Image (cartoon, rainbow, N blue to C red; front, side, top):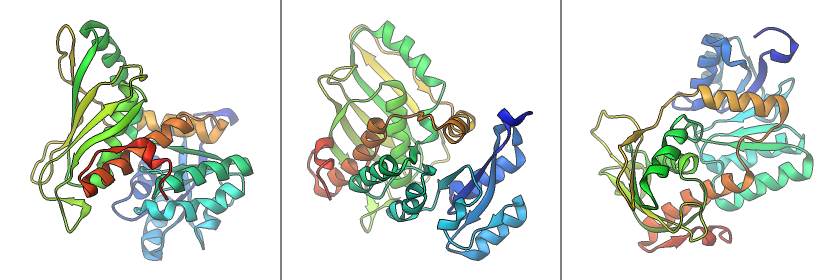
Length: 307
């Protein structure tokens, strides 16, 4: 990338735990300058972790999470607990900065709405997305839907035994291909240890339902996570229509498309994802956790009034 228009953007990263995207992306940007993103400043609650990453990438260490945005083009909030995101992002949004938040974008639906309100009040901007929201699979699905007739049912399968981290990927797959309009979690079974959705001990399954006015109509589908003891990694969608079924559609898994959207967001302030879709993704995530906990259907509308 040559010229001022294509200069690499300097980003502050808040949260670089060894399991975080903060650490992963800082390393990837350092190795692959073609993405045009640099981890210029980093902060983590564990200073030793931040120091090790700073040595590896040449970033400076911020004395506080709030100072991580100083001299930067934007902020990436990538700590592991989304319940911390509102507090971590607040000073940056009040300062009018552009803030990317890892998935899910907040620790609750109410926090997500407060993040967007802060951005509106102070001239900042919020963007949150799974990498699965930006894939090449959407074009394949559009063609499949044209051939199927009216969509009647779908299944979507993902990997892993960490439901709290991977449910957002499943909902991103749906949004990027079937579009918005989720209305209800009909049933959710997340077999987990001690009620912790981060520790599935068996495959998880979720029945979702779209609204009658959604582009695809009031269709139901089943989302699944394979659970523990599987080396398979991927995201696979199967569509069943009025006329026929489609071949399984595998999503491309990578960060290049997400990084391109992040660069555009930080450089221009353009929102790659509408606030309404970001909120639907958050509402679907927490409605799923609630449905599993309560053992009853939960509408996304309930999340809009939850504390």
